Image (cartoon, rainbow, N blue to C red; front, side, top):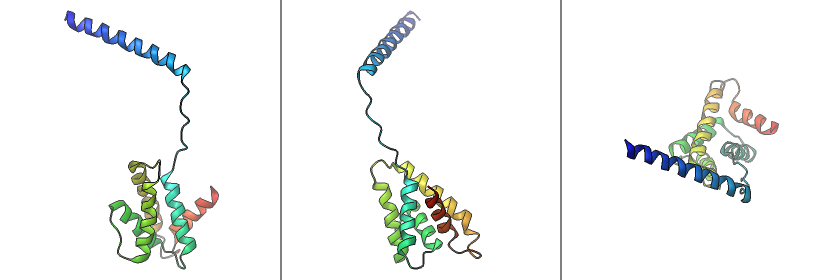
Length: 138
């Protein structure tokens, strides 16, 4: 038991010294400026909006298939879906985008697309229209 108490005392003393040292150095050293946070969701929406502006007849089905393919990590076989999926996958290689944030953004967009999937018969393109409204408001 005596060894354990002595060890605790030494560890506490070392923690105090370390915290004092960090506090003294913290005032002398300026913190590096933080890089602006990068939002993978915003970058993906930008790519989807460029798809809407470039394609003659943009489709929610193509956008949804591309998002799901990126989430699964596969390349679609159909040409417009493949091209869109490749654009979306470029987001993962951007500086400041982590794999976790990329997967989270894909998941959020797929969930939003599934919410608009039910209204495809009444308003085709509801998901892409929703994204364009959001993009314009920002």
